[in-house]
Length: 392
Image: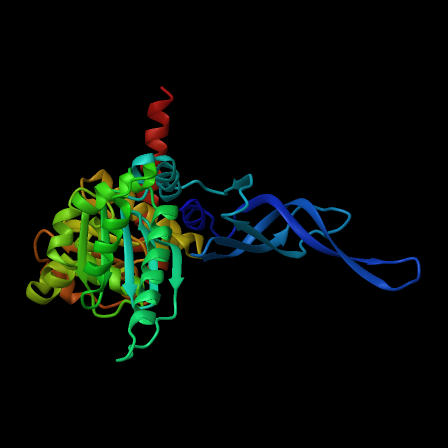
């Protein structure tokens, strides 16, 4: 999850310093060419950042550290991996409110994973952690299941048992059941119930503390959910989290808040469309009419390569919070965030309908307009005033 926080924290224009490897071309005494890998610390002016959910962050940009081996402004990619912890320095031109909130969330132990999930189909299982920010696939199990034979079904039974055992061991190895509040077991058909029975029987031995915690979870904090397609495990988890029984169990967790609010928005846009707006222009105008009740923003708007766009969304969210509007940031790692991103990245549920919005002519370049920049200027004035008051 730390990599995910870094992915949301680092944006184009930031300077990032880390230990890295660089392949160096050398000429030998015989005149032939040879290459070697050298370890060095480089500062990169970020141009592009890419996140791999399997545990790698790639930061592409131009080198700002002149060395014997790497020229100034030469392109380089920093690779930050979860399995090789290292120190990292980030310098920002501007530490905005979104970056500060991301830092607070990353350092808040209570915002860590509170939901575990196992998504099963015959021969394939994904063991996941659901955090307020991201669905993390901790392990994927694949076992070939033997076909059913009339004469002898033992080989199929043995392969299913092997599959269950490997999934069970992956749960023990990757999930701390003393910390998660809810565990979901999702599958088509009855596979979920069969696996739960297997895991319950295995954990009854209670040979380790992990098995004791798993046994407790299986008896009290587990929900078995039928899903239609377990192959696309993140889609299956979205389907499972829509189940009323799951929502009841997860009502104390943070991971469901954004998804539930998005479901509310989708329902209202059908039943009360006058109370729903989206795109920066219409959300901004609704804000000026003091009509917004809930503000929904996808996290990718804070990673825009355009600083002016990032400043606008930061200003909008901060001004909304200052006026008592509840702001929900939806991660694009969940389908709710993906859908919001496709609808411009921002939407709002209104307290009341605003008929004047129907008369507004859509502006495709609204974020560059004076009306949008007014939000940014007002926010900066508010920040300066707050800073001067704190220094008195």
